[in-house]
Picture (spheres, rainbow, N blue to C red):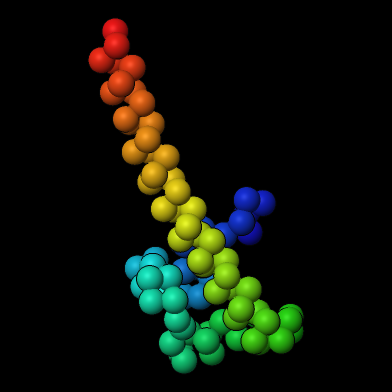
Length: 88
């Protein structure tokens, strides 16, 4: 895993699902029973399942928030560049 953390693509690959599935999980803020079982198998031998699921769920929410912040930053950057061009 990369030092910067897991991306939605990383999580999807680890769980054997598509990035779209991870995105739906984020938007619905819920995991299917099948996905819970795959997460448990993936993390077996580590923290108890409930804690691991909670941490993964929290990580996915943080990824979603980062995506939203990146979109907002891009929009603000575009606005700033437009204003700067108008002043020239």
